[in-house]
Length: 252
Image 1 (cartoon, rainbow, N blue to C red):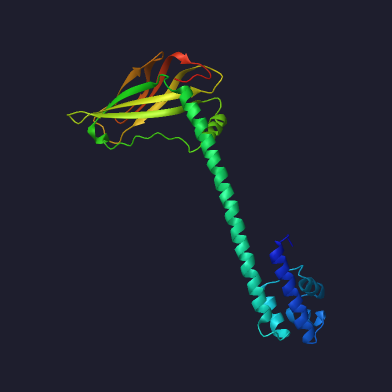
Image 2 (cartoon, rainbow, N blue to C red):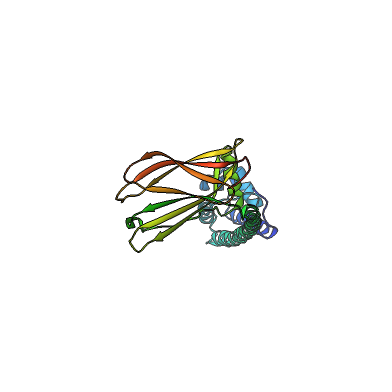
């Protein structure tokens, strides 16, 4: 049995003393009580010393067998109430400590994420401009970052040897004629051991009135050219040819 607080251990010993007293007053041996409660004699001896535990069913049987008129059951219930309250306080304290530790981790990770984004801030991005009809007006612009910077680095490390997108930004300009110009900007970091000169991309829209038209948007030191791979009325597969290349460890 795990070590209990002194107050609870004292209550358990007191309950054991009551059990021994009621048993003896009823003219029963430990073997007799063991037979009536379906426990062995050694377990009864440990219970009377307060060094073992038993469930409520045992105490109800012992109370009836020893003719304690509910005294044993009441003492057991009082002990369980104190033990449950202690367990609750212990659980609350452990939970508070874990939450405080989690808050520290969040602050540390937020600091790391801020440092990471500051390091890549101001660097130029690559982009493509696509003209699509007004049927594509329903848009969701989304930038996804994990809650913790540690998750970012773990994911990046697991994908070592690849180009990781640090940031994706979509801008939709809807003209008076209902046509939409979509500008997509991607910020990458090269985790591979080789320069990146080509990135494959694919775009699909449910409603169009002809092939999608793609134009490169080159900003900063990198220039982008479009290489068409496969085109249909509402799907295009293409590659961005980057010059100069994005070198290992570099973002752009």
